[in-house]
Amino acid sequence: MRIAAALEYDGRPYRGWQIQEGVKTVQEEVEKALSKVADHPVRVVCAGRTDTGVHAANQIIHFDTTAFRSEYSWVRGTNTHLPDSICLTWARPVDGGFHARFMARRRSYRYIILNRPIRPACLMGKVVCQHRPLEAARMAAAAQYLVGEHDFTSYRAQACQARSPVRHMYRIEVSRSGDFVYLDICANAFLHHMVRNLAGVLMTIGAGDKPIEWAREVLEYKDRKKGGITAAAAGLYLVRVDYDAGFDLPEAAWLPRYG
Image 1 (cartoon, rainbow, N blue to C red):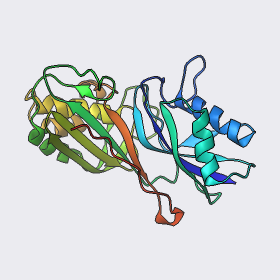
Image 2 (image 1 turned 90 degrees about the vertical axis):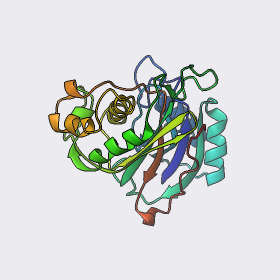
Image 3 (image 1 turned 120 degrees about the vertical axis):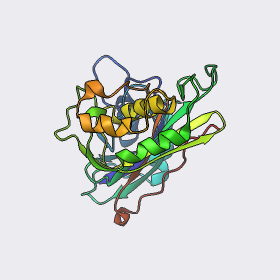
Image 4 (image 1 turned 90 degrees about the horizontal axis):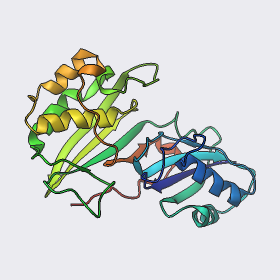
């Protein structure tokens, strides 16, 4: 049987999602825990592989198993074997044709910026601190140049292995609440470092170092070397993955917010 499930995790202790020899990863911890509950080796597929230090509020996974467990047992049993920085929030049987990665229609990320002169203490590693004042309205105006289907070569890592740099950006919203600035980004899929590179460009514009139109100019360059800085991973959260309604998966559990 195939099981779909959702994960929350704090990305700080891990070298990203994907299993790598000699380092601690989210996938390794999840597979070890599920294997203990299933009483056989379990391999997991995720909706979107996250980098070192990136968090998830709603990472969707699937795995195949010959074990029969209740939904309650999958969740409670797996969480018993997971570290405090990872938890399973729900699990349920799905059609054998379901695929967490290839059947995802949209993916949404939230990037959180603490915009104040003083670095955080309690939120260190969970937000990005930007000392210079940011104008959210400028960032929001610049972001609209990126909505739609575009070649995002300038916004992906030079080492990105995706076959095509074309992605469809459905939505980019910028909002402020006190000292916190939130970037909410939704696309059909993302390239390596794409959100962090978008955030780097928008923060540069928000600080007044570049005009609003620079976001469009960077897009038109189709050259990563002209794309500005890659923002830090700390403030990035995978918050939602959308599938066809026929799979009847639960809604995303929560949206990280600090202000």
